[in-house]
Amino acid sequence: MPTFSRASDALVQYGTDYLTAVFRSTSVLTVSAAHGSCAINGLPLSSLSIPLGQVGNLTYQLEALPDPGYVFSHWTTDDPFNVWIADSQSPLTSFQLNGSAALTPHFVRSPRSVAVAVTVMGHGAVTLNAADTVSGSATLSLGPTTY
Image 1 (cartoon, rainbow, N blue to C red):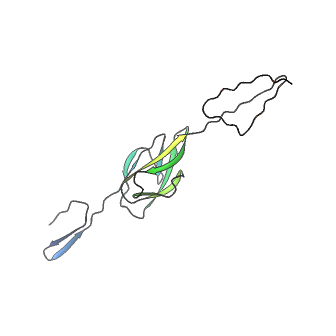
Image 2: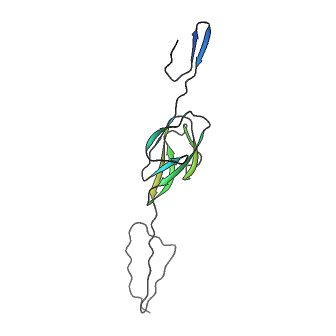
Image 3: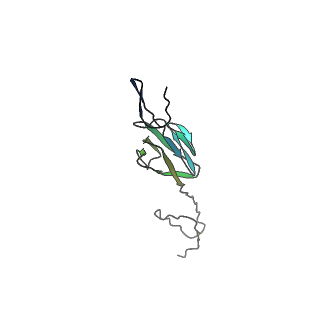
């Protein structure tokens, strides 16, 4: 009896009968995330390789899960021919796998806001321009206003 080992189709004649062996490879998705993780079909993952079975017409649900202090930015893959992402800018999307590939959710630091309460004592005023924003660090200096 013939035996097969490999990942290609084989046609073997055994006596007067023909035997066709079809081998299907398993696709492996490698997930790598810094400052967060992701979930595939509701299963949380951080950094590992997982076999997703046979390829073709299978859609998986994909969710980015940022660590505290981070927010989702976008998804990337090392092989856009093997991984099709429905919306690479959305933290909750779907993808199809056509072969082994790597998928990475990208996270960035959350914007921080600081609330400042100012009480005017005596003479003076404080004017706030809502369009002004400060990134990084800043020094706030207040001085007396003369009328």
